[in-house]
Image (cartoon, rainbow, N blue to C red; front, top):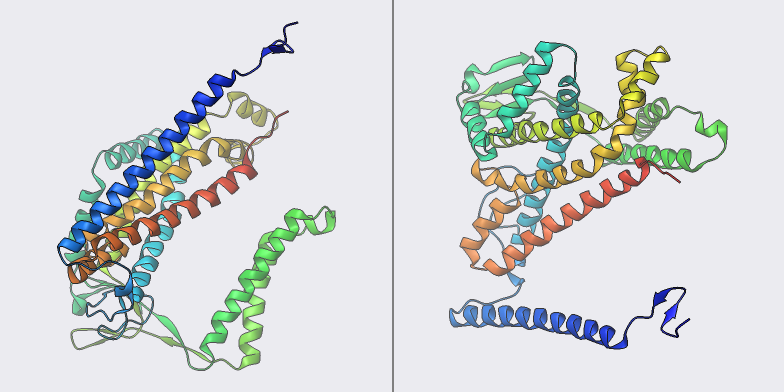
Length: 391
């Protein structure tokens, strides 16, 4: 046997290895030079126009109002940094709510498209085809204009006492913590942590006694009992805050603005059509023999779908569903079209006030990159749990 071969394989040529390393080093050097050129050119152009660089503007007070905020915000008092954080929370809110609603609706529509009921299957098929082929921006504008055509607060539609729908949004009752409001939030947090800890220990434990404990009843006990116990011990008093008509608008309670409602409705309907097709493709990817085996065991169609087909279809559904979730987070930036103050809308206003365009765009890129990588990591973790392991 030749010295150049080991077990029938030729040793890598030294010249080829050096050439490969030189090409890689040259590519890295070219990328570094391009990056340096872009940065140097940008800084030179900014300096020529008298625009200062850096993120010091984040600590300056901002005078623009924010229509919807989960945190306290006062124009002229709070800073640009706080405004950006509020926009980030608004973007997270829209993304999370749309992901939940579109997933539930998409699973229902996707399964219904495979229903033996001709009318249901064709109706869901028409829904998917129409929604997928209409631009999402047009759908957002349509729903926003439709919500603005609702009657005013004085003639608001009453769903039940305390729940009103008008052209100023959906007004609903809330609760006010008269004493110890922070303890109520702490109670809910403690309950959630206990649920997560129990679920983790249950999945990791090999003792049959713990694994046989149903997670749902235990979760209800932890979520209800622990917060109620803490509320009773702390003496916290909670009173309802019911919306009431005063003057030309409602007072009390809380509301979902037309901008947020239109954004959530439009994005949820649009995304659910794509989720439905992903679910339908995943179900069709399960071998037909699984259906026949379940039928031979005496399972009906619903039991077969829930216990046999869907668990196997998840390994096909999850990877494209991850891409769809990432698309939802990016489409949330269309909130600027309906006037909802998400991260992009707030930073667009900030650019016109401060002129810090490069830094502001970098903040947007970093924020969406963080959200996208977090969603991707979570879905990849779930995909590893449902993947079919073969030998």
